[in-house]
Every structure is written in structure tokens, then in C-alpha cells.
Amino acid sequence: MVFYDVATFSFESVRKDSLRDFGFSKDAKFKEVQVVMGLLIDREGIPIEYDLFSGNTFEGKTLEVTLSKLEKRFSIRKVIIVANKEGINSKINLKKITYRGYDYIFASLLKNLKKDVRQEIFKDDYHKMGEISYKVINYINKIKKGYLYEYRKSKAKDGYFC
Image (cartoon, rainbow, N blue to C red; front, side):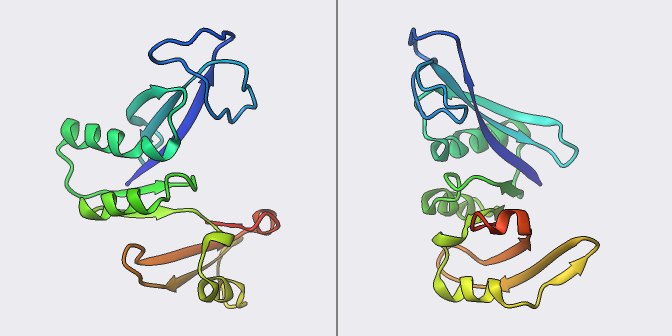
């Protein structure tokens, strides 16, 4: 199991080069150049692979490169990829992941789910494990095999389920 995340690092500069460029800034630093980093960590939180991308790279385009490097470096055949970014949860990335034979756990925005899945989420039949409420919804389409939802009141107001 690997966890994937994307971060941006800005510079106190407006000078572009082959790596530093203007792009979407998660820190609202739109007047500064930045780089984008894709990072894979293991279940203990140890970094196992990373890659740097030009500052104007969309985060959804970073996963394929980082996974290819991971495969070459460790000869990996089977892995579960966990990510919390909507941009990484694209049809193209999901097809590439399933083509490799990998499994995944991704977060989704509620508004991007089909109506029947949204209705199932709001049924009050969650399982309890300590302070966590969760449910598994079996849903099959061409790409997505199923969903596991954790319900958190703090996130529900934003329409965000993971």
C-alpha cells in the first residue's frame, strides 16, 4: 500500500526556468513561481518515491510518472494506491491504475457521484468502529469497483466524503 500526495513549493521569485513556473497555487501565491512535487509514502509514512514537476503541471498528470518510477525502482507488480485529491481521481488515471492491475482508494467529491450512490451515502446504516462511522457501497461501472465511505460531520458540510 502506498499513499500519494501532491504539494506545491513556491519561491520568493518571479523568474521562470525549466522547473520553476507559475501555476495553480494551493497557498494562494499566484505572483510567485513554484514547483510541483508528487510523493509516494509507505504505510509507515516513509517516503519511497517522489518526482518534481514544472510549476504549471496539473496534479492529475503527476501520478503516471511517479508510478512508473516506482515500478522500475522496486519491480512492483501489485499495489494499492491511496490518494485524497480529486484531480488524481480522473478517469484517465483510474484506467492507467487498473490497467497495471493495481487497486486504489480515492476520495471523491459528493457532487461528482451518481445520484444512486449519493442516496445510498445518506441512508443511516453506517457501521461503527470506535469513533469512526463507515459503510461499504458496492457499485460497479467500467472503472470504479466500489466505494468505502467514512462519514465525518466536519467534512459533510463541505460535501466531501472519503
